[in-house]
Length: 262
Image 1 (spheres, rainbow, N blue to C red):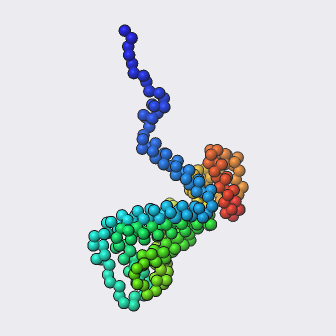
Image 2: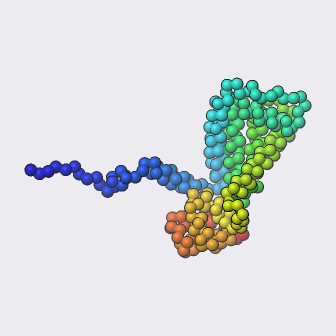
Image 3: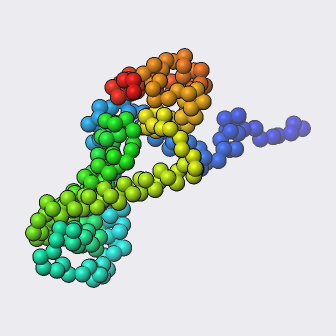
C-alpha cells in the first residue's frame, strides 16, 4: 500500500515562512523611502520644496489637531489677559499662548503653517548651500515663527502685527539655533574635533536615501573636494554597488553646487 505524504513547500514558500513579517515590511518601507528620496533629489528645487512643504504641513496639521483635542477642555483658562499697551515681545508671547490653547481645527491650521514653512525653507536652504547647517536651520525657524505669529493672530486685534511677527521669528530662530548646536555637540564624542570634510557628501547621500554608503566615501577619502571628480570606477573601488553609483553620479551632474569644486 503506497504511503501518502503531503507535498513539501517550495523554496520560495519556505523562505516566506522563515522570514520575519515585521522585518519584511520595514524593508519594503525603507526601499520605498529610498526610491522617493532618489526621485526627489532629481527634481527641480521648486518641486522638491513644494512636496517637502506639503508633507511638513500634513504632519504639523496632524500634530496640531491632536494637541487641540487634548487641550480642548478648559485650555483657554490658563491664558492670562493681555495687559494694555503691551510691547511686541509680550504680544508675541500672548499670541503663542492663545494659539496653544485653541481648538483642534485652529491648532491644526497653525501647526500646519509652522511645520510646512519650516520644512520648505529648510529644503531650499539645503539645496542652495549644499549642507544642513545652523544658518539654514535658523532661517527656517525664523520664517516659520513669522508665519505662525501672523496666522495664529488672525481674528485677534493686534496693535503692531509686523513687530510681533518679527519678534516671534527671532525667538523661534534663537531657540532652534540653540537646539541645533546642542544636537551637534552631543552627536559627536566629547573631546573629538573632526574637520567637516564630508558635509556636502553626507547631505547628498541622505537626500538620496544612500546614507549607509557614507562610510565607503570615508574609507576611500572621497571628500567634498572630490565630488566633481568622481567617476564610476572611483565609486566601484570603494565597494559601492552599480545602482547607487548611477544615482550618485546622476545627482552630481544635475546639481550645480555639487559639480563645482569647493
